[in-house]
Length: 573
Image (tube, rainbow, N blue to C red; front, top):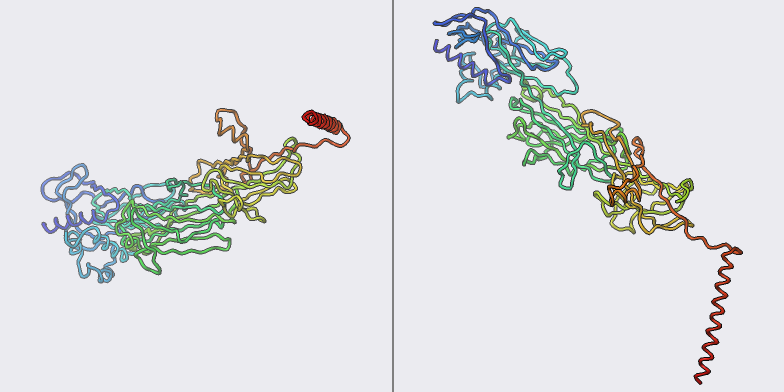
């Protein structure tokens, strides 16, 4: 009897070691006292709460025996004891010996294994997991009971179970929700009546952000930049609740950049807290590998893979955050305006501790961030009649704020796209208005600029001061990157010169609204006015008579002055 009680304690320890769920034990037998009694109920059940959609839970009896207990209070059995213990009906008895042959459980009976698992020197949770994984491959062809979560259900019950200890194998047999990461579990528990457990299967969570700010303190899902600018991205993976149940763990960051973004491969940094991981090659498990490719449409993929995070990050545990940062350049293929230039990522992760973490995987839902850029398309017009378009005016554009504050824009003459910025006005690109008065810069960030007119159209004055230009964009605040949205850019506008000055110098003064741009094409523009210069009087008009009269008076004055001077000289003599 003492041996049997000891075995019961051992099995309870096994329950605690395996459990990914917290069991509650109950029996339907009547209250008894005195010597150990046989329960009045003949079968038990397992109810699994918080179960995963599309999963099947199968109960396999690992250990069987004759159950007795000291007493029963409110359905709870005191000191439940199994005697005549042997392998249960859920184990393929002819295969179990071979399955355990190359493990520390070789040549052990069921009772020997239980004692081994509960021993303080040889047992423990890690040992228990190895035992569960070893026998999970030699379970009986048919479980003693199964239940599947369908539709919107969140719990299921497996009934008609003989008393004993059960291994519950969780498998995803039905296609789950593509927008939800999925994982399975493996756990054991004692069944001596109606038993309820709470599912605690955990999956990693992922996220992606654009890193902003001079000190990289900002995290955004949307940003706007100039063509040629560097955009910094951050990918994160937060490890799930059941991470410690795996012996090995595969983790892969899958990232896809639209062709408007060019990866700067030498900027990749992978960290966990203060630990910086090492890039490796081949199948090495003490770091991560990097794989890049480009599809037929020009979209680039970046895969950062840990073959075994358990080896690469021995200190990782539930809640640990793995962070990937890298930079990309917004290039000349960038989409202008909506839908922007997307950058999408998802995680691939081990989702089955039953196969030692090296088998099946699942993916987290994708997360997306968007990078925008815009076109400035101004028109040179007559100051008194905007219908008159002025060709051959020349300008240079200077940034007032942002990354390129104080610098002059450079563009490709044929494409009109931004190619860079310079500190020297002499090296700045000349923007020349065409026959329609238009001059264009493609690939600009929102912000404030100065437009300096360096050459006026024939017959017009060249302004002494620059035109002040402000480009403003606003985005859908509900966008969080969890779903694709091609209309995130909600508004685009521009204010020019006096409207900008009034707003900055006297904010309380009423100023004109922004002139709206086109969010679909990303084009924003305004009219840049010029006034005509002074006009000389025409020949034969009243203007010439004035000149003649003034000229005559000057001549008479000169003669008088000359005569007077001669007389003064004669008197002196």
